[in-house]
Amino acid sequence: MKLTKKVIGTLLAAAMTASLGVSAVAGEETISLTLWGAEEDQALLQELVDQFEATYSDYTFDIQIGVESESTAKDTILTDVEAAADVFAFASDQIYDLVNAGALANLDEYDEAFQAVAGKSLDDVRAANSESSVEAATIDGNMYAFPMSGDNSYFLYYDSNVISDEDAQSWDTLLAAADAAGKKVGMTLAYGWYNAGFFYGAGFTTDLNDDGTTAIDWNGVSADGYTGVSIVQAMLNIAGNSAFQAVADGDISNQIASGNLCAAVSGTWDAAATQEAFGDGYAATKLPTFTVGDDQVQMGSAFGYKFVGVNAYAENIGWAAVLAEFLTNEEAQVARFNARQIGPTNINAAASEDVSANVAISAVVAQSEFGVIQRVGGKFWDPTETFGENIAQGTVSVDDEAGIQEMLDTLVEGVTAPVD
Image (cartoon, rainbow, N blue to C red; front, side, top):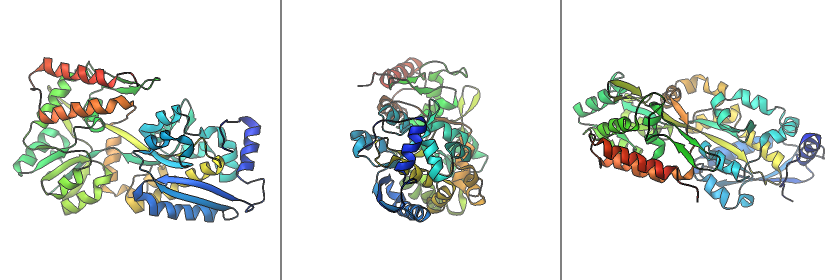
């Protein structure tokens, strides 16, 4: 029978301890679990599952591993929650929709039983990971996922043989140096995850309302006193520079490999391709500042995490929680970094010499000071994509303040539309 109701207090602990097999004779029955993770993680997940089974060798497991990208996990899971995997990885911006749909187990409700088997509490897990990653995994004081990685953001890669460290600090000097070298600087503009960085840096916000709609103030005045129009003007100046190249989402690696770019805004997923292309000039740093009037404004970024969650309908929900934590503990995060150069949220893992020496991870850590956890609804993406494409194409003149304001008003109207 699938668990559909949560029991609290002593009865819950007793029931969950029994379901975990603690009070039963070990090995008498097979504990079946399903696990979804990214295609690139399949070999690593199998290694970690083997270690998990060895750690709990008194019990018999049947753990089936399937492929599901963190970026599409929510859509697949919400198609049929009960048919979804017991344990799954997902991007942090999906957590609200998953919780609202009742798809994620409230881990705090299983803490006592979790302690009985795993030998640690959720408070131990919280203390082991960065404060911001735990905050992102928490809703209304309850933890709904285990932090897995903390490098889901973007920063600036550059070829230090072409771009000096000083040149990389501002868009003005960056583009000038690229132009002098006959090269270009690439960035994806037609995606709200990236173009939001200009607005976040200037004090504008987005937030998720209780009804699933998005609150957004980009067509007004920010808390820092900048108008949305002035930010768009800055973006148009950058996009209109001959040394700038607008790149489609997911195509940065190909453009870097082509040799056209000497710098690009991207994330750790493009580290290998960038290092190969730039060779001994391979370097990375925080995002550059951009010019707004007489000011240099530090560009912000949408900052996200990758989580591992537990299906609220999992039959062996207690063991699912133990497995999810095992896949995200310090040792697992070190293994994930070693295998795929993915940045840890675990404090000890992040402080290791290997992680600190990594060019891309160090850059994302530097940018994290200016990062914003992007909480938006589903209506956010299409309007911000169109908006970014209009910036890239220069469909409005930098001097046309009325036209820019109209474009921003259209953007906000689309983003804040009621959920279907």
